[in-house]
Length: 428
Image 1 (tube, one colour):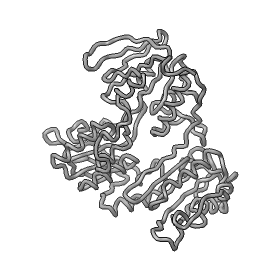
Image 2: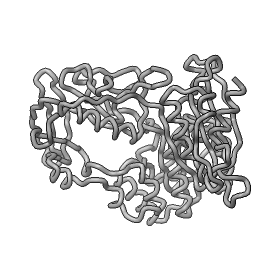
Image 3: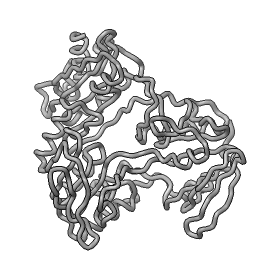
Image 4: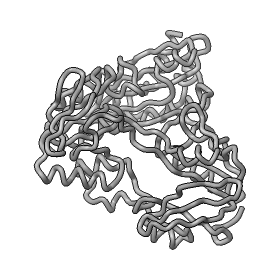
């Protein structure tokens, strides 16, 4: 395996920054993070000090795989150049979904994807925005709604599905999230489709929905992302049915000497065996390491995804891994979903919090297929125990017998994970 000193590494980035924690943007807006600088992992200068020739404000406009070159345009100068490569890594990421709704380009309608977006939210708040509408009630929508609520705004969340977090939680688990949002003062408009935006003098004044307008000074759209694959597709590099660049477990594309990693690629789902696009920072970081290791002559593989994730709304923690009951059925599994109510600590120890755990398992074999947790402090990270079991193909009976730690401040003598797995095993 080669060292950095033996490689000439050039990285082109069309934006002004290289490495920052986009997942922290809602907490920057909510002022839990004091300054934008705290979200920056490594500056271009730090990358250059590590031997990487980072060129910001440079956009790759074309890939010629036969000639092993890329065409690059300097966004500050407008000049184009052709750069050769021996090995090429595509890490074009994903873009936020923004349907072509009338008025979507109005001032005050934005996404929260970059530090510049967060700065724009801050400017809107300084200018007196008081009524916010968040479009979408997934991870970002939930976190942005909480942040704007903490800043004192009146917040409405519009979601076309019948429940918040509906893409990763079954309805019987999402109900608790909806209750918490309403109890905090958020107006939830569920099962409601956005149709456009009303504007006045170029500024947004309302969000138009199927059930009528919602007044707004500020709109944040959080509808998920789509992989940026146009560059790869134009070069003849394979793009799959899930919408991402096709790669193998070493992150090689089907085109010689071309690799891809991050939110722009499809990954192997360890439960369904299908190719999926799951845009999570955990996956992107691992894939970047695997691709870099292999390009440098090493041997590493990316073993697939489960979609394990965690978030919160105020004191409510939300975790999920694997398939929901609805997804398991759609994937052809004869699945059963079992919900267990449990406590985070021994009942007599102060501060115990309630939680609900849903186990999804295959009826015939008892194989764990997925899990969801919604509850108070101490609930969410328990999803990692279930993700570990899922990763290793365990049955719910085996999970129910695992040796988990116990002390009254941390768990009842039967940890909620063991209780949930045991209940699912008895049902099966």
